[in-house]
Amino acid sequence: MSTCMRNIMRFSEHVLVIVQPIIAEILQKTFYQSLNDFATIYWAAMRSKGTMNGKWEKRKQDPYDGWYDCRYESSVISIDCIRGTFLVDNMAIGYLPQNITTNELFTRVFGNHIFEVQLAELPKTYITKHSYHGNGKVQYEFCFNDQNKCLKVTE
Image (cartoon, rainbow, N blue to C red):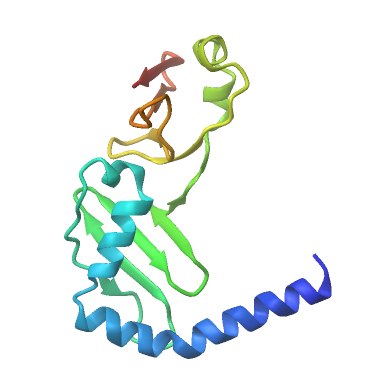
């Protein structure tokens, strides 16, 4: 990464740290509703439900800390408003693990397609971040059973 790009990123983070106390105050006054709204839009498993009423808490009392945590059912959702990190059970949005993408069923059905995924509501299950097909309402869930090496794909 170039020096110029690093400096731009540092400056951006510096500005976000400076405004963090104001953001924290606004979030608290609105009972963190914008964090609920963001999680509903950003987390595919929540998007299908349409709404969320999580009880958010600031991770540290430091006014310059941007981390907020919420328990939703059996999952812990964390958002860092400074770095833009969104975690579900300490896992960021990412891609399917190799044991799924190299599975015979996956390669037969999806070939070399790369899905952007995040954790679903069920343990050890991934859900696609984006919807697919003509109506844009189809999401895939992938669950790999390590014991019998069986992949389950749900549409």
